[in-house]
Image (cartoon, rainbow, N blue to C red):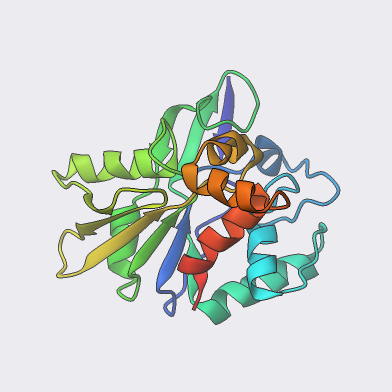
Length: 221
């Protein structure tokens, strides 16, 4: 059994109004076995698309390499835009060493609600995936359910938007379940009526274009 621990602490700071919330990076990040093109930071896998999406939206000219400079670029951008990162899974067991959420067992979650109370300016959680088993929204619902709280739906189409009251405060937090920035979500995007319509109108329209348009709505201004 492989114990898959999150290699990075949450990237949190007082000025953040939004947090990106995922699960775990690929196991090689926990094992210190990065590949060429990986960035040693949250969502740094060369196979992931989050930073490529943000690079296009904000014209960041990011480096995609295993260097301190590449990490510094990403941290500077997050601080400047008021965006933190707080992945919800702290550790999990795996029978097979892979990066799938479904392969996680005996999952231990971070105290997201406690962390939210420590950072009173946070208004929005941006889930990098939906409510499929072991996805970030799925686990967040578990945390809320333990407190008798439900996510109230505001928008039911993809990307789904919910709101919930933060226990112990007078705040309400909005959650957005973005289409996952991974290749495994491409098939799901291809089945969406909105994507099919855009693709029919423009054969050059891609799943990356779809993600860029979706993410732009919630990452900017």
